[in-house]
Image 1 (cartoon, rainbow, N blue to C red):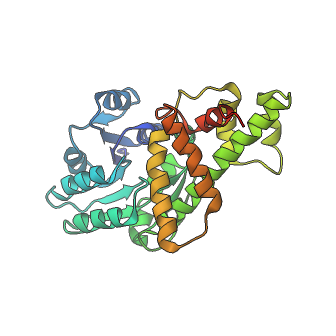
Image 2: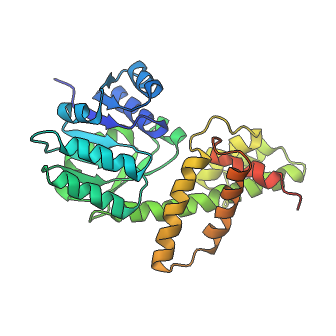
Image 3: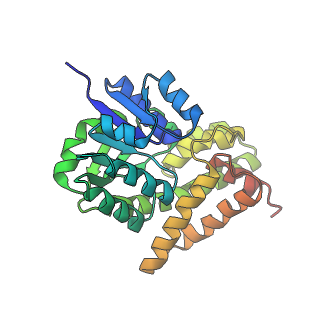
Length: 290
């Protein structure tokens, strides 16, 4: 039986991990990224490399996109839409404002392609182990056609209904991530200052009522004070924080804890930690005199 072919546009931390899991799951994955290092990593992981998003579209009916900005999504959507007789399903996994995704959806619809809004819950480290949850939204028929592909890189997925609901759920999820990451840092610092072994504290706290996925995923990095191997860079997270803040303000929804935690990430940027993992908020708090 021939392997199902899947396209992947965007082979960064998340995209490369998803592509690698799909390859391991028996899919033929043709991918594109403008960065040579990302393309080389994809080839090393067993994937085929395309020269453009358009080439991916000419080779695959289902395309996954994992992109860094609204501008890039607009460019990629236009490239895919420019392929003749394009009736693709594009599984858009990036965290971007809903109007940006809606604009891309309209561009693709002109060429009979369907865009699904499918942001992900999970870090780059979780993506490597298929520990992702997909918040899918858009036409139900198209989502059903992609279920086998979604199963190839995630541990679960939810059909959340109309287009855009996936992003709404992601904004709520990332609001919690922002807060839980900072609260994990506070707990690790408190344990360390009290004389407890930080690594042991992360293990024990992770087995208690106060645990969170952020404590489990980023707590070990905080205990080691090791933030260079980023699964989510602070500078990338700043983009997500801005999108969530705008969404919260547009709904006049109370979010005092989120807004307070945002200041810690801003301080991380000012401290030269833009390329570090977001676990580096622990270093920001430890550097405070009071």
